[in-house]
Image 1 (spheres, rainbow, N blue to C red):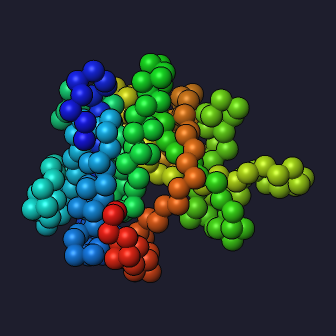
Image 2 (image 1 turned 45 degrees about the horizontal axis):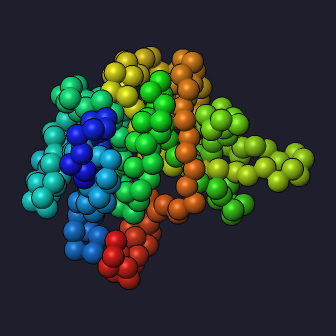
Length: 252
């Protein structure tokens, strides 16, 4: 984390909900001897444009795991409907933060440089309210998998739409790339608080994609590109894969 005082005060928040259908107690899942939430926290804390990092938790066991491994945590309500609601609760408690970056608690391989890149686009554009990340896809089966959210953007890098369906549909062979949406977001604090209060929208509910709420309400979302591969942990198989990466790459 940076000690500079000449840039926007940026708070990185890691929402971590204890309950998980496919992987119960996911934030405490062991990754090379440490709980996953602490691995994510340590990666986020390496970002240079972040003023502070805090885990937003809903269980005392997760809170203790973060603190015992040298991190900061805030206990949040258990009944939040979405991660954005949990994020907004933390933002309410931190009026000093001008920019909030949301790093998912199941991304133990998150690259600190991606966090910095998201923060940097707000330094370049003072009017920007929200930003996220995309990565090019190559595997056809992965492209068709509805668990992989796709995004299409305009020529200036703003999202046109997010979908679980294949986009763009290759009716003509033009070579248009397919991009996977990576679920890390950055928000201006005031926008985030307003966004969390907006009513869910029809497209948001249809696709079960919360970011569509912003687009349906006329807000622009900047999307930066990375070539990096991300391995989020949703299943025991994902957990085994990440453990293998950590065990064979001690520089992480």
